Amino acid sequence: MRELAQAGDVACLRMMLDRIWPPRKAQPVNITLPPINSSQDALAAIAAICVALGEGRLTPDEIIALSSVVGRSIQVIELQDLERRVGALEEAREKRDEEKNSQQS
Image: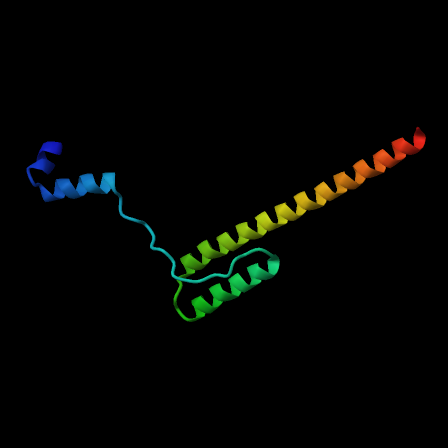
């Protein structure tokens, strides 16, 4: 096969290039989304996606992909919030236990 490609066989060259450097299956999406740092930001991002859909700048498949990104962002925000809250509860419990131990001594 390599010999055919080196000899200039265009079909063979194309086939080898497709294996080495496959064509992209999707194109980049041209939309500006606001940074997503809170649930309110997520709402703004979804609104921007809906506007782009209404204007015909995005396909339904692109909407699904972008909505997935927004959904994952919300999950990360929720996880960070839970970690912060658990940390605060653990800290409060440690303080309470320290006070309780110092009162018993």
